Image (cartoon, rainbow, N blue to C red):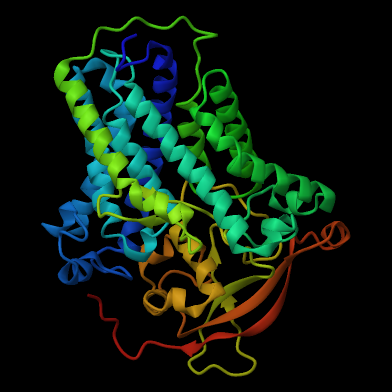
Length: 475
């Protein structure tokens, strides 16, 4: 090892790179399968309209230069193919410069998608994947040992993810300080998983222990990442265990998994594996890594200022390339779960006795007897936005109307985002309405008696019965 590289982290780099490649694949697969209904030419928030009003400097993307659904699909599937190649170790078969170029491809493609994805891509883990993916470009391959500077920057990202989440909790909601947030969280989180019902019904004293342990992991343990080994490895392992606990308790897309991958990069495997001896790093590579590292540290000024601010914000990108970002999650926790149920009727004119049939989504709660499924790390974007819409109609102002139009028009791509349409092909509803319900988990007794994991109560009308004014018009 020399001053620039560390032989001891060869295994850490390998596991990190393969894990990141797998997450790239999941991200591109979701884009390929969902984009047409969301941001396609005939989508709810079409990319062509967006790029007309947003200049390239604010949202750098290949789709600023050209957009068609076919071109987008080509980019998304290319991203999948490159991710599979990286997962299989193709970067190890190339010279150093070739490996770096290969890692740059998925980053550039996914940046292009995120920067035109609008509301559908406004999640913190999009920026996190891009920030981590950019660092992966400079992590090297089998030719050289991992650069110490890049390893440090990966820990710096992990620190900001965890510490930022810890601070936003302490500042954002009294229940975190009172250790009571988990009395509600598993029931009201955006998309419950198959075990969330059981997590919710754990004893309340255990919930308080969970919250206290979370505070330790997010507010104290991150500082240990910058201590000598094996302390840093212990800190990373604690974070991995915490993230696996979150994986079991809910569906948070790839947020938990990319945090795990980041933590792996801080683990020293040399106690179990003899470090590989690498060739010295070429001068051009050292100069490039030093320059990039210096630039990223300079850009870190804004996230650090945000961490120290009493007005800390979550999941904020400070530059259009998403190079250094602010992170955080669940600064406040909802006490009550509300869900929007979309229903349609075939009656030409809705009456009090009309039969209204509900559309079923893949991930979000609907049918009270349907047990939640595990989807993470895959991201069901429409389901997540439906959760936000139930919190406030303002979250749905730009896309909910177009969603209803496409359901009335029996749009094939939109229906593919759903689990089930209650109307047979060729017979779309004449009217659609949306109603807001309060959902709560059933008790053990109610579950045994009814077989339902949810109980729901009508709250109010979210959208009155609506029909198409005329033949469907698409952008």
